[in-house]
Length: 96
Image (cartoon, rainbow, N blue to C red; front, side):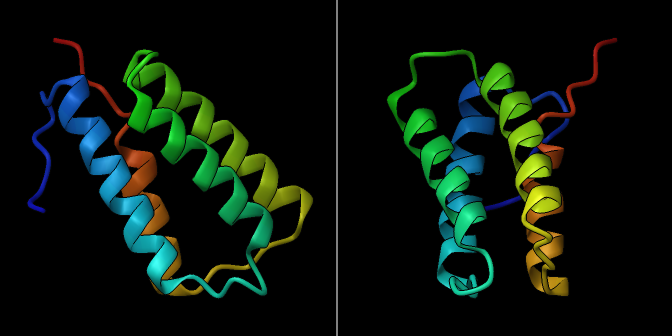
């Protein structure tokens, strides 16, 4: 899947988020990041059903990811960290 343009719509962001979450699942160390895995899985399910606006889901996901990382003292590898950074960047919407 290619890079996303800054002006991408909700459907493109939704598809990219699902793709990134699936990619992260294939590379996660599940022993260390089980609570994070659960949060990402719940948001992947929500994104698949397409019932709520994508920016709203992505913003809530970012908050919940931060809480899980802090509360469970989860340390990510550099690869996991860069994937998570890309996933979180999907909620950055520029308004001109």
